[in-house]
Structure formats: C-alpha cells, structure tokens
Amino acid sequence: MRVLITGGAGFIGSHLAEAHLARGDRVQILDDLSTGAIANLDALRANPRLGITIASFTKENVLPEMVDRADRIYHLAAAVGVRLIVESPVHTIETNVNGTERVLKLALKKRRPVFLASTSEVYGKASKVPFSEEDDLVLGPTSKNRWSYAASKMLDEFLGLAYWRERGLPVVIGRLFNTVGPRQVGHYGMVVPRLVSQALHGKSLTVYGDGRQSRCFGYVGDVVGGIMALMDEPQAYGEVFNIGNHEEISILALAEKIRKAVDPRLKIVKVPYAKAYGPGFEDMRRRIPDLRKIRRAVGYRPSHGIDDILAKVIAHMRMEMTAGL
Image 1 (tube, rainbow, N blue to C red):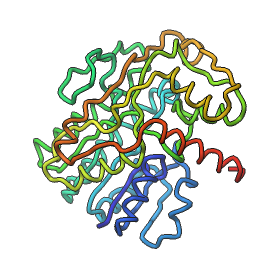
Image 2 (cartoon, rainbow, N blue to C red):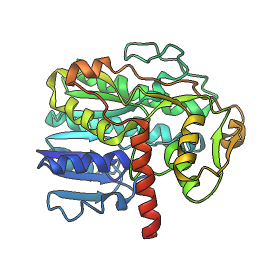
Image 3 (cartoon, rainbow, N blue to C red):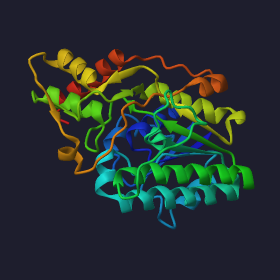
C-alpha cells in the first residue's frame, strides 16, 4: 500500500509512518517542519520505502501528484498546541480550514480514502462526561482566541462528512484526545513533555490554574493502532470516532507522579492561566472520551496506563539529554 501522511514529521505522524513501514507499506511524508522535526524520522530515513518532502501542503505544485500516487491519505497537518493557537489565530484558522478543503478536493478526484485528524477540543466547554461523538459541542465566544482551533476543526469535520454524504468520498474522522509518548515536545503547550523536561532539568514543575482540571492521556502507539484500524474498516467511512484513553487524572496528580519518578525534592508551582496564556483564558475542567463506538467498530482498547506512558516518556527524554539532543 502507498500511504501519504501530511504532517508526517510531527509527533503522531512519525509514529504512524513507522507503523506503516513495519507493515510493509510505502510511505510518503509531506511536512513543512513548522511544528514537526526531521529528527522524528531519523530512525526511519534509511528505509527505501520512505519518501520525505519538506514543503507546505498548501503549495500548488506539491500535493496533487502525491495524492495521485497514494492509496490512502492521513491528513494530520494542522496548527497544534494551546500556546500556538492563542498566539497565532490567523495561522490556525487558515491552515486547518483551507488545508483540509484542499486535501479533500484532490482526494475526491481519485477517490482516495482520507483520515482527518480532529481533536477533543471540539467538545469545548461541554460538561457532560464522558464525551460521546453524538453529544452537543459547546464553545466559548469568538472574542476568545482559545476557541478558534476547536471551531476550525469542527468546520473540518463538517466538510469531511459533507464530502462523504454528498460526493461519496471515503472519509474517517478521529477526535484525538491527549496523545503522548516518545518524541513529543512541550514547545506548544503539551503538558506531559513540558513537565518531564522541567523535572529532568531540575526545575520546579509549573501547573496552570489550580491543577484540578483533569485529562485522559493515551499512548501514541495505541492511538496510531486505532487510526490504522479505522482506515482498514470500510464500515468506519463517514463516521466520527473518539480515540484516546479513558483513564482520568488531574494535572496536579500528573505533576506529582512525574516529580516522584524524577526527583521527589522538586517543587510544584501553580501558575495562573492569565500569566501563562493571557487575560480571559478559558479551560475545560474535565475531558474524558467515551470509547464505546471505536471499540465496537474495530475492537480498540488502550493497552498503556499513565504510569507506563510516563516511564516511556521519561526514559526517552533522558536518552535525548544524554545524547545532547
């Protein structure tokens, strides 16, 4: 199989590429390295079945030929991370909406199946947990940049489903919940690598707000396996699926686990949201996925708990520090 991954040099994209290569497929990666890193692909670059193109998927002369040669497309390229979203809302909206529209139009010409990576952010301020794919989506006001990412991804979902219903393009949408593992960085607001990096450098661990907000962290290997299984299942076309883990933990408890694993002498410091992201920042108290739909569809069951995930992340980041990366 010939696979195209936009954003394939990113954290999740590089793991997806690795999984497809292990399965014997040919993988073409398209990435402009705005948030991805070529180092994520270092272990794969010698594989003759891997191709890497460093360019934006918005370039007129790059994407069409790649889509023509692909048997399936994973569209992961997007503006990601809370900090980037808050600071660059124009980039967020244009990248996510215009880019997805272009991928779908090109895929339609050849009837190539497409996986669209969406996000748990679309649930916004909904208070009913766990979040089900058919639940109402509740966002904050347009005056808050915080919600531009969720709104752009909601539009991506509407567009993908419209291409399926109206034009018959095979599309699967995955709402990815917090996904973590080796090679993820904390530059854009990802909490686990940020806290682990602080701990490994002997710094205080900074927790935003009161720390009682909770999340569910899925291991990247489990998530990638779920994504691939959905694309292998024709009955999943035209559907939206939560993908992640349902093990809930508060950010304060997460920081405590990291502190104990690295150095119990370190301090945990609470930082107001306004100081971290600016005045008026809004956050969700709980974000828990209902995974029954994806379990029924492809038998998805996450196999890594938070302790196992943290051990893998800490070991990987220690290795990078030792190697001077």
